[in-house]
Image (cartoon, rainbow, N blue to C red; front, side, top):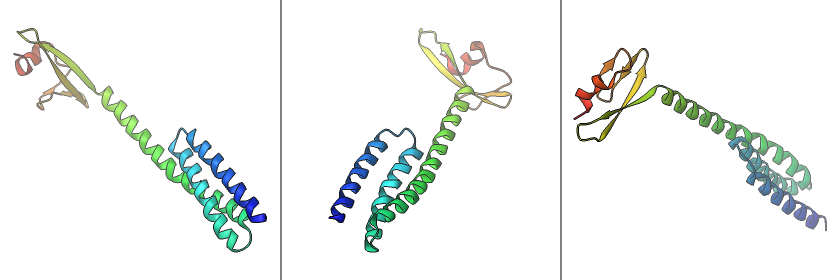
Length: 140
């Protein structure tokens, strides 16, 4: 009878855990949820061998949650770093549109490097180049 109660409780806890994980917004939250579920399951199995599945599930769940959180948090940090780099890249990039003799437009992407602006062909400008400066190189 006791085993049936423990099994039923474990099924309920696992179901609630999956519902929790579905609402997670960060990798740290998801990692903690997945780690808690995995740890609780493994802890219950190991604890059952020593006659205390409940305590094993609690200890395993706590350890799994902590480990999962730490792993997920590192993933969140990397995502934030990538996003910040993307914002920096965007802030140091500019597009100058060159209108060609046939009416078409050629976009010229310039990238800031220190006090200089670098063109797509590697040419350097001391300030943002004008359309007149770029037209001989990129227009037709």
